[in-house]
Each structure stands twice: as C-alpha cells, then as structure tokens.
Length: 153
Image (cartoon, rainbow, N blue to C red; front, side, top):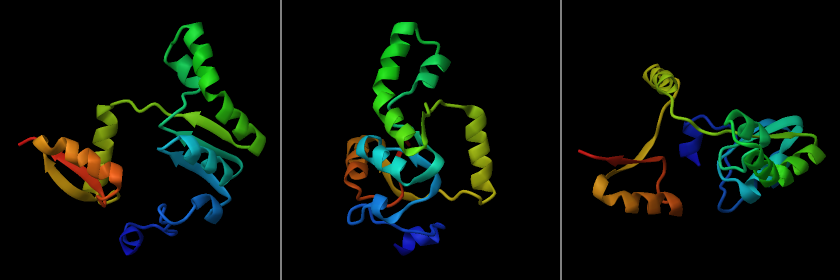
C-alpha cells in the first residue's frame, strides 16, 4: 500500500480483498480498462452527470460513426453497447468508448511529461524478448508491481 501512496494515490484499494464499489462514490470520471462487471461497478461510483470511459469496450455508436463504419456494422455496434448505455442512463451518468490509436505527437507529449518529472513510469521487471510469454503471464497473475518491459537487445 505504501508503494501506491508514494505514487500519489489519496485512496488505496486492494482489489484482491476490497470491493471498490462499496468504498467509493461521487466521482466525476472513471477510466475503465477492464470492462464487464468492473465497468458496471464503475457506473455506480459516479455522481449524477459523471462519465465512464472504457477502453476495453464495448464500443459505442459514436465510435462506429467516427470510424466510418457502414450502417449494418454501426447498428451491430450500437447493440453491443446498448446494455451498458441503458444502465448509465438509469443512473444519470454516461458511457463512452475510447479507441486507443498510436500517435507520435501524443508519445512526444508523454515523453516530455516524463522528462519533466510530471509522470513517473514504474518499471516492475524487464524481460528479454524470449520471455515475452512469461512477462504476459506475470501481468495476468498480478505478480509484477509496475510495468513489464520486454527488451529486444
């Protein structure tokens, strides 16, 4: 827990033994990287007018429009997110899907933030390229504190 506080966290929740939905409420924004049940809980910790942004899906109609998908695919995507959008409306909050795109400009901005000390990436462990599978398994099990880096010398 001290590790996370040193990174600047005001509230620390151990997801293995605590349910964040029972401990948090009244937030303006949640960034959800897991989806599913976690996204549903995230909607419930928002205050009215709050927004949940999901990067694990489901994609929403705005994404389908921005991607220029044909009407049939747009309809299918609307159906994929209908349930979570309905839950959000009932709670007086909103849901938006964020599709991550590679951007050299954004990476340069992030690099500048790291160089200035505004962001501090935490490298938990460096794996040689030949151990990529082990790196992914370690992340899945939660045994790595910080980022797993795969190096290709």
